[in-house]
Image (cartoon, rainbow, N blue to C red; front, side, top):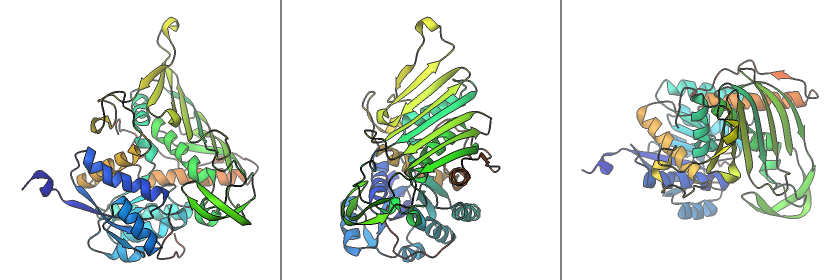
Length: 418
């Protein structure tokens, strides 16, 4: 028997087949083709509300079969892992049911729509872990090689003590007032707007790169366009609107300052109104001995400043993160041949499958997801009190700080797509 034949399968069901469902499918399909995995992912079931659309998506993306009721999938004995790619209002119900049924879980960010739901999910994950059932949150930007390298350099002390953090996540897909609404502009489905959709990413990256959690915030949230056309069609982040209009019930812009557990100040900006900025996720970390800067729109590059170098030859060093000894690059191309957005989803699957096989907690854990949710909740509470500073007493430390490499309400059985 060949080594490949001897490996146990990991039978996967994904709930949702739109933007994130497609991206996750790419990860499941690509990971075993480019990386040596201890178990073979099997793309068994794709779950969606519409049998016809789900069948078309399954055929396109490579899933073996289709189901319209996630509850039936959770009960099946031939499924090992549930991958949740739906709007946030269904995350808690699906994840909790799956964990209780003994299924490993991968859930898209943000982990939930509310702090109460995130706490419920974290409790379910802790109970499941005692039975060997594992869970992970899909903060995929952690798996960008340049981001993972930044974390390594901070952990190695290459910039000294973290003194200040600046983060932005800038998009422009809602800057045009004629862009129709979608589930992402509906608080009942999305939980929040720019804050949870993209602000969650830069909070998690701050936790991940610095090894410290945000301990308190002062925030402001603004809705710049209060009504949008009702969508006649919508795919990804664009659609076509009709003549009817609907209210926007989430924030368009989130601005907040924060304090890390070690006392360093941090500033965050998340907006979907930044004309010309398509996916500008930026983080700069200043330390006592240097600095790091990353911009996703130049995602294969990490800028590193070493303050200990002589001023005569000093300056930011532009590191092209494509060398064989850089994080994740061993599975890809020769130096200088860059990676793209979709590769993070492949790396996510690689890390998850390896952790499950080893019986180790994958990261980011549900506890890490809960930590981000606490920050989002604190920003909302602060914004409701005219930006009053709001402490997060349960901030703790990220669950994987030592690494140097990489509720509740009833929901429909056929969950939506993300």
